[in-house]
Image (cartoon, rainbow, N blue to C red):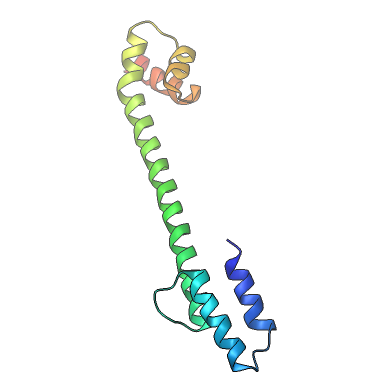
Length: 116
């Protein structure tokens, strides 16, 4: 997780005047980053940033998908299950508890059923 920060620090603050040391560092960097081909320090940093961005994007996408799925589930429950449970004689509090919905949303559906 902190590889990027360490690599950036070394790149910025360590002077590689000796080419043998720089080459050794780059070889070690290939091992650390598990690169398939040799790359420079800057390229390795860019690759690590891209990898982190992909992971963050995937996590955000998964989270958004879960939220959308939960919203769709709630809509379906409000549309179908709430009226059915209300007709069976259950009150808003009990329905909200059973279906893990907000009491306010359940009460709104029940109010609409009573009006229409």
